[in-house]
Length: 346
Image: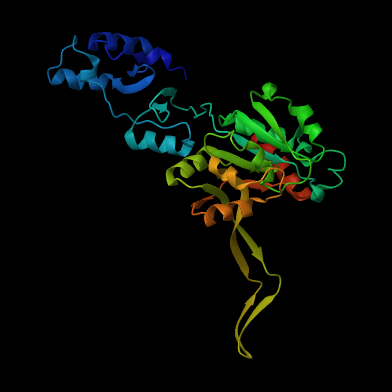
């Protein structure tokens, strides 16, 4: 929502602030100085101030709440709703690390602040498991309900506030570039990392060394997920990792009875047991420093890069993904993605 109409100067009197609050129609105001949120003021704050003897011509700073509930742009929607319920508030200001007011989230509104965080989409693979669909087009251009897969992913990133996108291309990459261009038609800023030969799931990132100034997201361009990436970024920043890898549980069944032995004797029998493992979900958050471990135009996969970080003493965290997640690698996965997009309308 538009927050400018609710802004009150810190040198305003309480009387002036009340007039401003009344005109804003929200029963509260935002005290802002040089762009920074100083506090919030509700009519309840004013009443409590008057009861303790503060006058209407006193400064608004005498009665404001200088420790308001706020969130950062990387907060996820669940956190916003939890804070609203916990503190009994209907509006929550959005501020950055320096306290600068960015936005205000009201009732039935979702956090959709423009983020500076870059996202790298790895779109250079051949998609051999989807052949013959990928015979003449690159895998990210395979349509989902008439829209190229990569565009569906980009639209979802745009809805979460991401704008700066780097796309790594190789196989038939010119088709991706021709379709997306500079991203302006999607409200994005897109540039391209060109692989002259396959460089693995991390190798192309070496081209970004020296260009990244904050944590960034690396994501495969064949993933469809409801994950709010802002929650993963908030986790990464909170734990101060060198890297964070998205993981999810994968269950598989051994299609035979499993026999365990003790010497030559049977110790136990299990009919078609199920096993559960955590697997990489194809989404990683990295610190800019991680790029220094890569060599330009040299093959490197993401597990190797993450292992290098850990061997150098960096912590690599795991962020569990419970949301819907589809790795569109096989025709049946594509069918699932079509159904999901049709159901959600996005």
